[in-house]
Picture 1: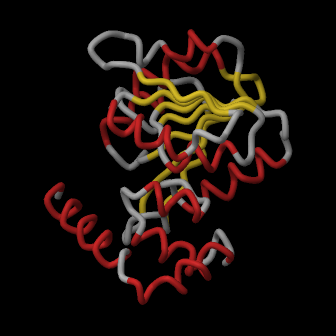
Picture 2 (picture 1 turned 90 degrees about the horizontal axis):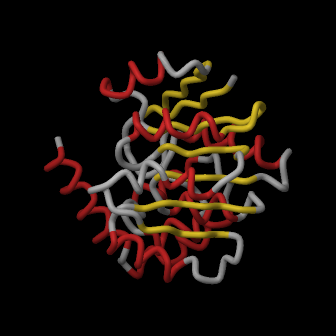
Length: 214
């Protein structure tokens, strides 16, 4: 499965660089964020934050993204904590007052840091997985959050660590909840789950993202 995903990603990146698509990218950036044109463009932007960030979409299920977009629109002063940085970090920075994002991969952290260096409301942290520093990063941030995103490594541990820092009316976006290894942690976390399945940015197949709430 991973071989197939890698082959798809490599092919998409090769196609995305064709000059004949310059007009397509311009149109996609101004199209509906929930429509087919933006989604199609995201398929070619997989693993390319340089293309994903201008498209203004995270690598989540489209319906879940739309729900989070509405949630943040109603909370312009929202604080967000994110496990697993990427195009979603930039997307969140356009919609929240403060975004703290923790990333385990040093190279990806540096690459993304260059792309969002101008976003004063973002703190992008690098923490190693060899200790508890990654999972415990939310304790370092302090305070409570309107939105917590669980989309990186050690997701079950991150979910458990994050819940005490969620505001009473806050939500958690947990990505890739179709994976069996996450189901028990979600069922037993004490929060209700709204599970979205269907069209998802960056992938040509339907996928899951869940929103957890009190």
